[in-house]
Each structure stands twice: as C-alpha cells, then as structure tokens.
Length: 153
Image (cartoon, rainbow, N blue to C red; front, side, top):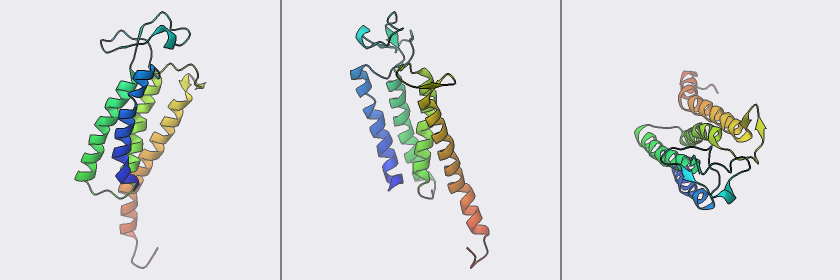
C-alpha cells in the first residue's frame, strides 16, 4: 500500500505547496533572481522589511516533487523492487531536497541548532535512514536470503 501511495502523495505535496504562494509564507532568503517572489511588507519577517523579493522555496519544492514523481514511476516500471522500497525511495528523494530547502528558508519562528533550522536536521536524519533502508532492503537483504542454506532461518 505504501508503494502505491508514494507517487500520489508526492504529487499532492507538489500541488499543495502552491498554497504557500497565496498565503505568502514559507519563502526563502532575499534574492534578486528573475523568478524571485515579491512578498508584501505585511508578510515579511522582522529584519527583512527592506527586501521586496525572496526565494520562492514553495516553487522549488513543487518542481522537485513533480520531477521525483516521474523518477518514482520510472524506477517502479523499470526495476523489480522489493516492497516497500519505493516508499523508502520517496522519503529519501523528498528529504534530500528538503535539506537544501531548509538552508534557504528564513522562518524566524523555527528553532535553530548549530546555525540550521531543526527541520534541516529532521530531514537529514530521515534522508539517511530511508536511504540506508532502501539500499539494505533492495540490495543487501536479498543476497543474505539467497546465501542461507535451505531449511535454515
């Protein structure tokens, strides 16, 4: 069930991020890039009132999520996966980008440790755990089962 839900959940996350555009929330640091997001003064955090345009992190995440849906569907159709490997790959791909995205965000209400938002560390831990699980489940574990003598468990 988790593998069947993974691409749809990622697509829903990608679409859902557009709500942040309407709400003018969860944007990144100030930038002058051509695709920068203009934030009204009432939605800018303290200390950033002098800046008008910011990184549209919701857009970055949306594009990443939709691209990863394609990756998940391609991997699932191309390779024989041991379930729930596709779900683990979904978590790995999502949190890999989320680690980067958290370095761009300026949400002052978040907790910071060692100069990074707490969300960065949560994403990093989930990335490592899901990647290790995917590799172990998909590649290491099957070989262990194949090398066991018949009748042994």
